[in-house]
Amino acid sequence: MQSTKYIFVTGGVTSSLGKGIIASSLAKLLQSRGYRVTISKMDPYINVDPGTLNPYEHGECYVTEDGAETDLDLGHYERFLNIPTSQANNVTTGKVYQTVINKERAGDYLGKTVQIIPHITDEIKRGIKFVARKNEFDIVITEIGGTVGDIESLPYIESVRQLKWELGPQNCIVVHLTLVPYLAATGELKTKPTQHSVKILQENGIQADVLVLRTERSLNDGIREKVALFCNVAKSSVIESINVSTIYQVPLLMLGEKLDEVVLTKLDLPLGNDPELKVWRNFVEKLKHPKQKIKIGLIGKYVELHDAYKSISESFIHGGAMNDCEVELSYIHSEDINDENARGKLKGLNGILVAPGFGNRGIEGKISAARYARENNVPYLGICLGMQCSVIEYARNVLKMDKADSTEMNERTLFPVIDLMEDQKDITEKGGTMRLGAYPCRIAKNSFTYKAYQRTDTSERHRHRYEFNNKYLEEFENSGMKAVGINPETSLVEIMEIPDHKWYVGVQFHPEYKSTVVSPHPLFVGFVKAAMGD
Image 1 (tube, one colour):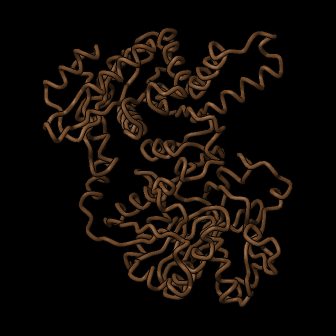
Image 2: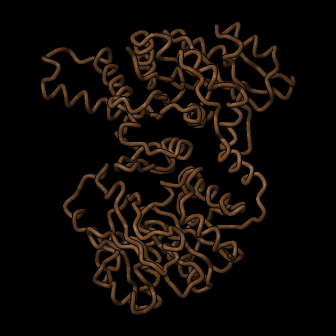
């Protein structure tokens, strides 16, 4: 008997329609009905993972608890479901081909000719089923990256076709997301692109079971009936996904459209409990009706593409709602800031966040931003490189260590207050070789961080090669910058604070990776509260 049910979410007409949000919203509704649900992402690019991709190319690289560098959609999955994903939840073409080639080299195929079908498709199917291997989930939702019709996606579409045939229609369904554009010149919503997209799926042997139509105008009954007739689905399976002001409204819209009921009926599963979304509704209500507004400067070098800092921006939404406050993010390019113009660029901000990143470009601007926040008592949060910049700035301007630096930027600096981690010194490859995933941290009492967390022990996710150089720790602490978070196993400095400041915190880890709707990250809640003046 088939125990785990599978739902595939595909996209057509155009990219960036929000497959990840639809998948996450459906998962949230099914979870609310009492089902154990997880979501996976199949990415058609040949990179093994997004770890070495420029953020301009692919947006943020999201890191899981077990240290996988993954697609940013996994962040959406976690933020909606409030359960961690893992390495198994993101499969790429690069991973698939790497695995198949390694098997071929090891002789696993017994000398057979290795082909797309069956070897590549078998490996894709194995990846899809792998997350359900321990029978932990009742339903696995799999998002197929790209757009139906793309050459890169064909092996994934074929794998879905095979699974639908192997598992049967009551165990495996396809939810297809398309666009219904509005032509202002004629005042019409046009269904032809959706019809063509469904036709491409059918040409590849797949009949969509549910159609989710992205639209900027409401669909009338006539349009629903037309799509149902020409795309060979029931009218009840034509779901409207109208544009909204926030992605967090989408689960409520899908509930109103009965997407979860349609899907459960097709999977021959009981409807279960009525979705309990009280916490979610309260969150959306706070989001839409804030009592206060503040402005936070996000200082980074990829600010032209906001998706490069997706988890950070979403964490501010969570932390803001918790404080009944709207957080307006001002994205400021670090290359445009220096000590001379910092006041003009940063004046009027209620708080400053210096974002993570790698490399020398824009580093001096980040250091200048850290200095401005320190000297002007502006609440400050530095994440990863942002923490390191605050350390470098403090060393230069308070400890008078002329030209103190990180060895990432200057290998010959006389004051390497940030240095390459010992276990990174012999590593030459780039992909997946950093300090990745969750590590413990012990927090000192009487600190900003302890006040936020209300506990002394936590675990946070990391993505870095360089660390605070403990050789200088005593000098920092004696002069007023304190290490209030330490890894109890390695003595790595995790958190630096300036106690005499209004709120000044630098963290080596990435708190944004663990913030969700149900559990906003305490550091973002505390930072927003400080920026509000509380």
